[in-house]
Length: 127
Image 1 (cartoon, rainbow, N blue to C red):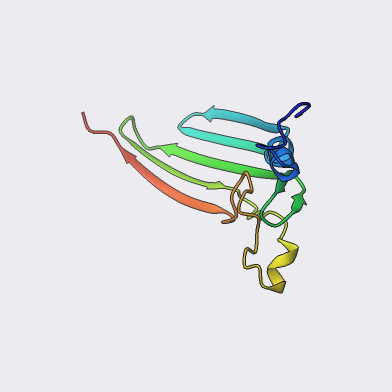
Image 2: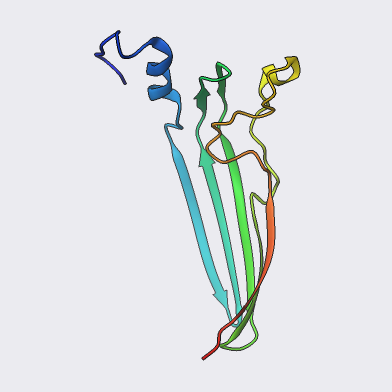
């Protein structure tokens, strides 16, 4: 909290950016489990709400889920499939976007505004 400041260098908007521009809380829970040649990873992330001074809006927090499964064919070859933001979660829409502001989502969202990212990866280790 900003309790003392010089009004010549900080205004009310900047103070609000400092106090509310980033989530107050960010949580992450991760589990990684191995079963034979399989590996499973699950992650749940939480981002608390934030304030965007560009559009003057406060946004709610969001939960996101990441997941990954990998199979090792041998010590040198592993196939992995996974997802970041598995459920394709987006931040709340900017209410001003429809009236011509342009940003559909807050540009300061702490977890991005591109939705889910899905991937497959083949790892081959050469000796």
